[in-house]
Length: 430
Image (cartoon, rainbow, N blue to C red; front, top):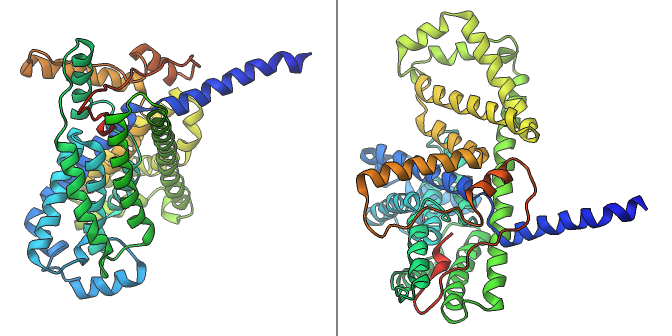
């Protein structure tokens, strides 16, 4: 009797969970802040190294083009910089990397810019693998993951364009004709022919991924133009949601793995065990942008010991705190403050910014919504224009999203239908 009594409840919860995973791109605010954070980190790095770009990744690099070609022929790394040793080609790739970072951060044509962002990151980093720090490794991985997420659902120019098209459709107006999307698709199709050259330098799976993304984008545009309300459109949306949600889980697991391995390896070190590990980097000129501040901290044994042990405890404990929202939020703040301290004390701003962007995937939805509302209020105060759409939460209202973050089950609240009509291209809204 008891077993039959509980079965419907369990089945209903399972169905509701399955419905949410397939019908919605979960964590829209978290994926958006990850997109903005990593695009900003890579953009700032490229701009800072702009005067030294040729020595780092270009024709003037000590790691010459021939040496890079020999290495890549063995490890199969992908980089478009191996297509030519021309200085003009290098400058073009670097410019595309900068431009794609800006546009990805703004959320313009997010689906396309995420692919270009990934190509730019892989091309530069794989050209000179000995440049950079741990933050480069995180950006390297996240650049690939972002391609598979619908990270432009909020806080993006794509979302604003979608809202305006929906408002026009609701009032009976004509939907704007999208001419930029097909042109971008055609241009990138021509550029993809470069992957068929003999000296591309790249494993087959990444080349296959680029072609699959290009074909799927064309298919999505055609379906949204000619059959926006059909079953094929619904199937494509379900597949996109599943890929997004699975990738979001992978990003969370990646962050937990980074902290778990870092923490447990630290435990095995004698300097971390006796609480003196922080003392030594504070006395290295390379990691002392503010020598006076480093000397003050290093002169206090209590502060050094507290920061050393605190770092290990936070990193080891964080993966286990995901089951308790309040404790997780406290440790999340502690880790972000730790990375901010690393940026200031050790002079590793881009590593810290990359890690803070990765940590942001665990930020509470309610907090991110309030941040977005505050930013919208400030923007409208100084740049108000008639006809700007009101901000909305995709897939449900703000109270619903906050309740989801609190761990409470909710019945499915379907997302508003995408705009339809000739020329409308909602597929570009991630």
